[in-house]
Length: 378
Image (cartoon, rainbow, N blue to C red; front, top):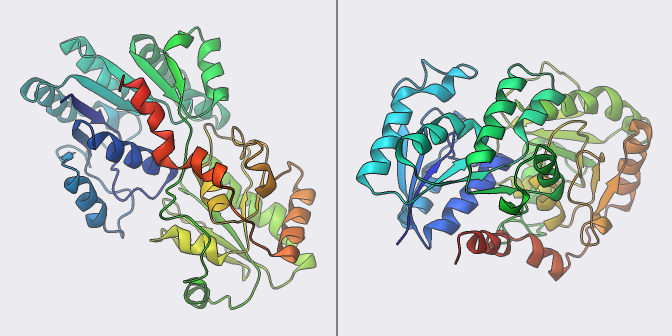
C-alpha cells in the first residue's frame, strides 16, 4: 500500500471553511485506499469549536494525525509561521521512518516544508492549489505577494502533478509557463449526505436567531479572509440599505469566524462560527456572495444550491461555477443597486428549487475525487 505524507499549513479540525472542507474530504477519500500521515500545526482556527468528531472520523479511517505543537504559538506570525524548524524535522523524520512514497502539498503555504523535503529526500509531491495564492495577494495588496509568487512558481515547476479547482486557475498557471500536461482540474464540491433541502431545523434556528418569520439573507465564510471581510462591509453599506427600503423587516445573517466586526445594526446578525452550517442555509431565504476579489471557486455556492437556495453573486463570486446546472439557481450581478433588487425579487418569490440529479452527480465529493484516483494512477 502506498504511503502518503499529507502536509497542510492550517489546523484542519474542525473543517469549517472552504479550503478546510476540500482538504478534509480529500484526506478521507485517500485514506480508503492508502496509508495516510496527516501533519499540521496544532493551533486552533476556531477556539470555541470542538474537533473530536472530525478526529474520530479520520481515526476510524486509520489516518495517522501528527499535530505539531512546538514553536507554534511563538512563530505565529506572517511568513515566519511557515518556517517552523520542528515542523520540517517532523516531516523529514516521518518520510524516513515510515518510508513515505509520495508527499501531498496542500496550499503553497506548505511549500517551504515540501520543497525542503523534496530536496533532502528526492520524494515526489503533488501540489494542491485551492486558488492561485499570489494572485489573491496581489488583488488585496497584501504583503509578500512577490515572495509568494516566487514560492508558488517554484513549487509548480518541481511538482509531479498540480491540481486546480477551475479552468481559470489552470490557465493562469499555463500563462506563467507551467507545464500544462501536469495540471489537472479537480472541481470543488459538497457533501450530499449533509447538504440537501430540509425544513427540519428551520423553526429552531430562526428562534435561536430571534428572527421569527422575517426574510433572512445569508452570507457565510471565513471572515479573516480579506475578500470575505470586504464583502461584509459591502453588505452593510452598499446592499443592506437598498434592501431595507423595500423590505424593512429583512435580516442579514453573517456566519463565520476569524474576525470581529465593529458593526451594530438591528438588521445584521453575527453568529460567529456555527456547527451544522447546512441548518442555517436551509433556514435562510436566499444566500449571497458579494465578492469583488478572490480565486478558485466558492464551495458555499455549491452547498447553498444543494439546499435548493437561490444565490445572488457577483461575477467574481461565481467565477468557475456558471454552467447549465447552476444557472437556474444563480443570479450574477456586479452593480449594487441591481444586486439589492435581485435579493428583493428572490425574497418575494421565496421558493426552493428542485435539485437536478445531474448537479449532485457532478459536484458531490464522491464523484469529484474519482478524478484524483485517475491522477494517482488508480
